Image (cartoon, rainbow, N blue to C red; front, side, top):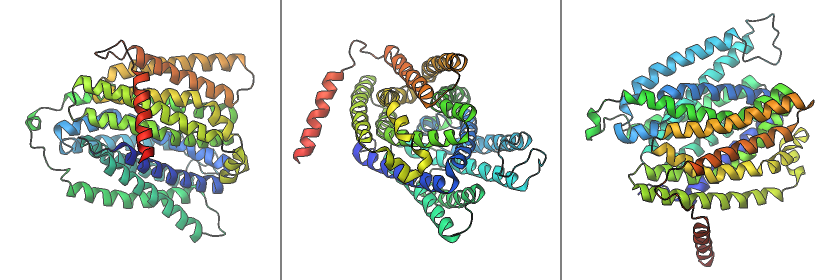
Length: 439
């Protein structure tokens, strides 16, 4: 059985999110809404690069490692990543994608901008190493250990930022200094993680019949798998790009922090989905996989709803006290996002099961449908409404995620298509909660 233990896994992921939020609070306090908005856009560039890179080296890496081992993919990962990273840095320099606060168009060789570009490039390389380690643990069902390493990563980030802040007390905390701190602590984490993977013999060839099977087909699988993830990423983050384009960097900073709170709520559903993925990789029968998916979808929905109700009682002033006065609209954004949060909570286990079964084209079709809905709605809003605000962006996001949910349910192609077992699994969850409270 996979080493996942749902409650313990959730606690570790919640700890990771808490540390991540602390890091963002530190960013926001010292950079302000506009500075935080600029940083969030640059980090989105990094995410886009990572997703394009993983099209060739990693979207289905956990699935592949469980069959063929990690060793056979290391040369591909190194060569492709080196080429892609060099290309990304070249394009970033040519088009001035990363700018220092004092950047001037006439000064293309601004040293601070070049330094920032290099730091974001190194940060991308660190995240690639993190992705490799995460997929290795996922492939063996070691969900708890994976979460512990992610907590360690966030803890090092926060420690580095605190050291930076106290070490430069009274001095300016600039974006390049923050990124340098992240790069240094990230590099330390990578060294420790490489040692741990060495101890687990991650670099050794697998001792199975699959060790002699060609892996050429994984190139195509990776493209299909990552296309679906890229489309889902666009659904998640298009409102942030639109906020920056239509409303300014300060608005993007506010929305970025609201999305961070939403991501924290989603941790519960992501935990449920990850467990479904991990258990599906350890050769459960199709019937067992589908029963598990239906059960964890219901658990994910009700658990996430409870978390949403908890957020409702938090005063808006708490957000301004934590992040600063500029972030007052955050609570209203999070509240309006509840329909989209619940939609993803329910379909997360479905998406993870499709992924574990290598049904990447199915995922791509479902996500494309959601993105098409978003594009149609945003186009209509752009041409019909003079002033776009957070409400327009968030409700477009809600409807798009709900469209993906609808596709996952209607086109799930399970052996038993007649029932979602929502009532039965809700009753099972109720009995489990009552039993837990009694003890």
